Image (cartoon, rainbow, N blue to C red; front, side, top):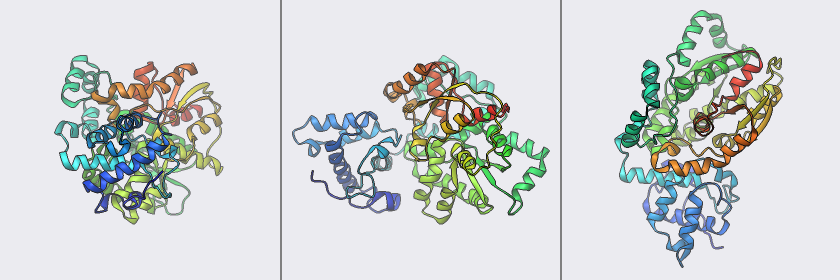
Length: 436
C-alpha cells in the first residue's frame, strides 16, 4: 500500500497551523487518510461514516482517486465524533501514517463552517447556559413545552431537533443555588478548602447538564467526596464549550475555554483536582483546552482534570475512599460512554460499583448521540441504528437499574427503554445510605 506521510502533524500543531483550513491541503489529507482506511476497513462496524466511505470508494474504478468532494462531505456529516475509531485504529500517532480520523473530521467540519457559516437557529441549540437559565427559572413551563407534541413539532421545524428526542428536565434548585445555600450554612467547610496544606481538595466543575438538569449528581459528588474527608468547592460559571464544537464554532469554544481556564487555574494552584461528572466535558478540558489555547495554564488545568469516577477510583487505590457501604445496590446495567472510553482511564464506574456490592452487566456500546448530532431530525434514524446494540444490551441484562456517566446517553436510554438511568456517583451515594 502506497501511503504518504501527512502534510503536517495535525494533532501536534492543530488549529493554529497555516495549512489547517487550506482547501488544497485538506483535500490531500482527506484522500490520504481515505486510502489508509480503504485498505484496512477495520472500523467498518463503528458508525455510518466508514461504510459510506467504502461504498463510495468501491463505486468507482479509480477507488480513492475517484472520490468527490461531495462524497467526502457526506462521510463527514455522518461522523458524530464519538472518537471510538481512534482507539480502534492501528495507525494513530506516533506512526509513519499518522491517522487521526476524529481530528480530521473536525478539521473538515471547521473548514465547512469557515466556508458556509452557522445558521442562527442551529447556533441557538448550542446555547446551553442560556437555555439552562431559562429552564431553571421557569422549570414547569419548560418541562411542559419539552413534552408537548405541538411544541416539539414546532421545535423540529425551526431548530431541527427531532420531535421524538427526549429533552432534559430542568430544575429550579440548580447545583450552584444548592451550594451557595449550603456554603452559607457550613462556612467551616469552605474555610477548610482555602487553608493551605490541609489535606486533599476537589473542585467540582458541574457541567451544564448537571447544573441545570441533574442536580442530584452534583449533590452526590459533594457528599461522596466529603464522606472520604475531601475538601470540596463547587465551581460553575459557564459551559465547557463542547456544544460549540458540534457546529464548528471554534471562536465560541475558545472563548469559553479561555474564561474557564482563567478561573480553574486558581483552584489548581490551591492544589485542587478538577472533578467533572460528564465524560464529554472532562474530555473537553483534558484534550481540547490545550489544543484550543496552547497555553501552559490550559495544560495545567488539563493535567489536573479527572472524570469524577476516575478520581474516586484513584482515591480508592490510595486507601482514602470510605468503603463503609451500607445499602445493597443489586443488579445494575452499566453503560460505558464513548467519550469516557476515549480517555483510556478504564471502566472506573463499573469497578467502584462492584466494590460497593453491585452486580454489574457491562454495556459497552455507543448511544449514537454525541453532542447534538443524534438529536437532529436529519440524523435521528441513523443515530437510532447506532444505538441498537446498546439498547439490546440493556434490555438483555434484565436489570431494573441502569447507570451511565453520560447525560445524553441517559436520555437515549430512557427514550428507547423507558428506564431512567442514574449516574454511577448517585448509586455510590445510595450505597453509603445517602439520598442525594
